[in-house]
Length: 197
Image (cartoon, rainbow, N blue to C red; front, side, top):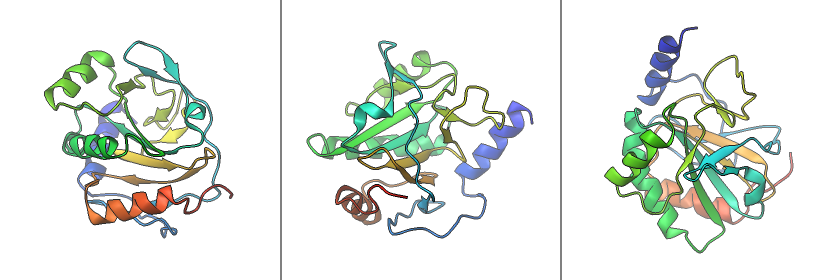
């Protein structure tokens, strides 16, 4: 499948045309175009690399002990643009809690695209993280770099518990200031579905 067809498919998902989702688990979250999908069995995320603004490699194992939301996005994705300020507010509200909010751009242009985007939208509470070679997330069916996280649509947010288990994901824009998101985060931080398969 050509890259253009993949981009068209992903954009269709962004606006709410998405594959049928499995029934959700005990963590509940509704976005604009989908709901949280629980993964079974729950597996521990592998240590695939993503990079910060200084080019330093990071992996998810360094976040063990924290509940982690990993959001994969791109500067060209309209729902991502709409969602990022909400994620920034979420990160600001949880600066001193057990929640880490990681927003990882898969823009091919890497930092050259992402840093101006952060400045433009005053995203002061989110770390600048990139995965331009799809080493951690993959949108290409071939997954040439053995990425860990499938991108079913943009944006996509995965929930990872304190033990590193991938609990599930939600595609499309989420209002992270909504009551649904607040309830989700509270359940997530209380350890709902924490660990285990």
